[in-house]
Length: 72
Image 1: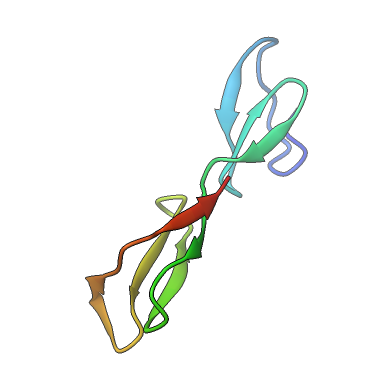
Image 2 (image 1 turned 135 degrees about the horizontal axis):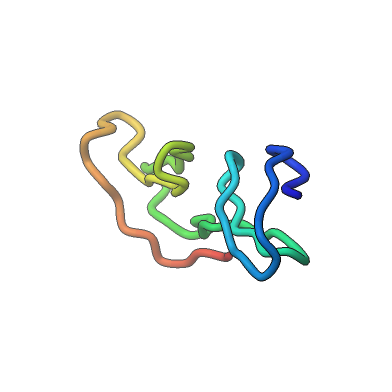
């Protein structure tokens, strides 16, 4: 049973829950990486629908920024 969603899954299966965690019958872990190094004029924003971080210019969300390092 998923501890977050309280949904049941077959033995040996894998799934992604509503908190963007990749799970199997023994544990869950983040299904995304977290940006750690990017230009100072940019900001990192989590998109819960896509289960990923978007890094864009602080003053222009339509302009994406490079990510130099991430964890996860």
